[in-house]
Length: 307
Ligand SMILES: [Zn+2]
Image 1 (cartoon, rainbow, N blue to C red):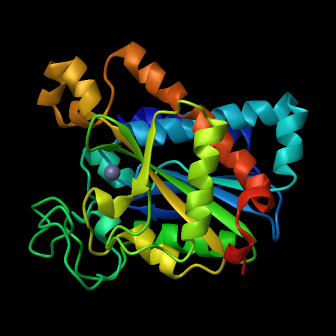
Image 2 (spheres, helix red, strand yellow):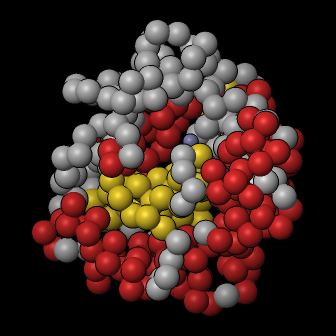
């Protein structure tokens, strides 16, 4: 299954050679990134997929977005103007070895989303991160940041260093029947420093995408995590940063097609072709809104949030 995803990324890189680069390699598989738009101190949108290898649909949504973006930039003056004012960085597959093995964790058995330095306080047992064994899910690792985690941390740091504002959207699937759009923290229900910007974005989402499908909430409302990578990235930020996680509710796909629940891939991905296509197009309006909200951040991010 990874062959299709890597092939799609390879094709995109061939079409846009100046935009594509390799952040790192893990077991000789690349961690690719594609960058469109302006260099320098402009607002930034970072889109990430494939953090959990089994959640293939996240990588596919990122690739669908990249494909649409590449096409739009070849003819669409509205998008060209937008990209002259911001930068979009897409990292479609952070965990290529996990995807090749058909598993959530990376090749060392580490759950990359539990791999940051552990926070104090209580987390949901097991699911919130565990240090017992890589044989169980949600293993946090024992040797600090894995290659993949470091690639993401360093990418966000370098891309946002001079940015006046930054969004990230990390594409996952699992957990529940609805599509959740989560913001930090995952470790605690305490508000993040940019809570005013979070609230402003929530209002923007409701008003600009009426009847959207998302439940917009703090990650810690669902469960609490030790060593959440986005919590760590948020705490290290140098700008106003809103890292969002889209958790596509995969239980809805299983409910409509119970047999697919028998396979790990089926528990985390839409299998029926019509449902797969529907999922790929379902989130493009959100991504488009994020591009517009990135370019226009001054119009809605409260001035109290600016640094
Ligand atoms: Zn995930």
